[in-house]
Length: 456
Image (cartoon, rainbow, N blue to C red; front, side, top):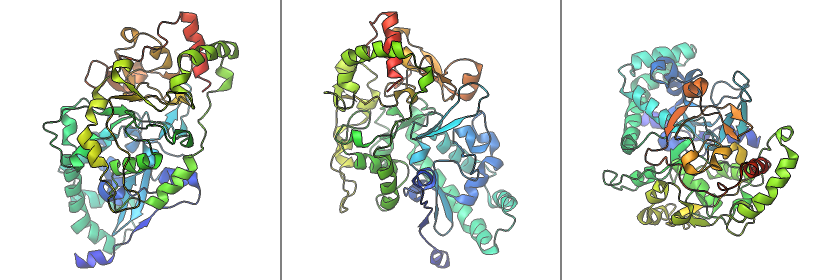
């Protein structure tokens, strides 16, 4: 074992181009959630039967997006060389989406938007299922690894066979126990994650006594400068962008010690003034949008316009009326513990707090942030302008064909069912109630407001 440690390095993959660095650079998450690269590469080939029954090949079936010019690893995965190479996750895995204009059309990869098609929970469960499978053994995996790389060196082959494979299995099963609380809650599905219940496990909270559901939609990453000083996360529990970023990286698998501050700073600088993608202008009815702008100014701007009086402030649950689970899941004791992270380091957390509502978010690029509300329980902006009882009670999320008329992704029909995840709004944490602003407008006025929202 001592000889094995002699070969330890710490060499993260870095890119001079900030776009490539965002897609493949490290944030330090290989520390707790990384998988040795050669094992990671062959898991979908050895265990294809354990992947979700969704379209695509290999990791695509979990919602990972691949750049056409780079197929060896999907966007959102990082690499770091230690004793062996490790694959981890980075910011792009939760903030890169795919969009298609029609069934059968090529997918466009859009960086910085919510990864509405990526299923993080299923990714972790796939790794765990592999580790439980009797095929997860040195003989089977080494055969697959050598098939992948016939030139694998003898020394590395020996390390993998006698050390790495067994250790990897143990670490995956250990990680599974850290996430066992998920089994008593509704499935998250693609494009959603429970950010803070994993922190409770990290801090030693008794999750057998805590039944809260913290599932929430993934956010966009553009125009972060405008958000400085606003209350962030869905419940407005922090108002410092860089602190939010570090907490997200730790949630993705980094430790306080392994945070790649240099790599994260490059991403932070790049997204600071990054504009939101624009809705296709040729698809906007300019006359209708102009009429909708007046409705927006009257009904929405105070809470959702950048610079609005209440934008970035917390709206109490009694006023907003949306699902309370996410608010209830972030507790005062957890806020206190969050503010201990980074103790003794220059970046120690200090801004976490407990709130009793949801933050009013700016609506820049709102057309690409579907489904809507904090828990992603409303498929389109058109649906959001309807009264809660008129919104879809069941729909499928994770399908990437866009509905330009209603401003959201297609969420029903055979293809949406095959590619997507069934979201039942009566389940805990999935309620589509609340946010009734604009629901009393006349049908023509709703069309005008909807058209204007497409321009943001």
